[in-house]
Image: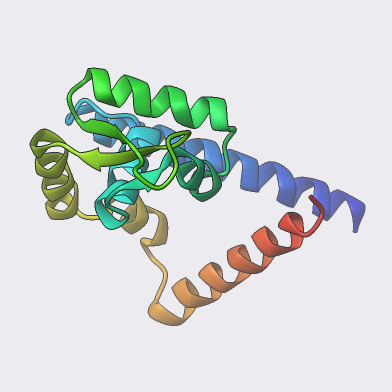
Length: 143
């Protein structure tokens, strides 16, 4: 059983790495990394959100989230404003260029997701999603 658990963990890690490679390759055409694309999509749904919220959403450190936002501000994809509720926080908004990239990403669809699920029927796809969701929850409780 221990060998199966080890092989499974290695395969999940391989899968995660391949997903990231595929996403980065696909998003390269738009001049984005997977993290930047996820950041744009997050702030397109959470207008005026905060870096601290992005940190939680992506499961990264606050410093990393701040770095991503800062680089995207430099690229002209995001803009920040000091919060009127709390001057310690900056609200994040998409620029017009950022909004245009979100539209392009939505039109392009979920290329990697489609590749990942290729050959699986709807039931298998749902079971795969449920199993991964359960595994993520199991590991999250260990924190």
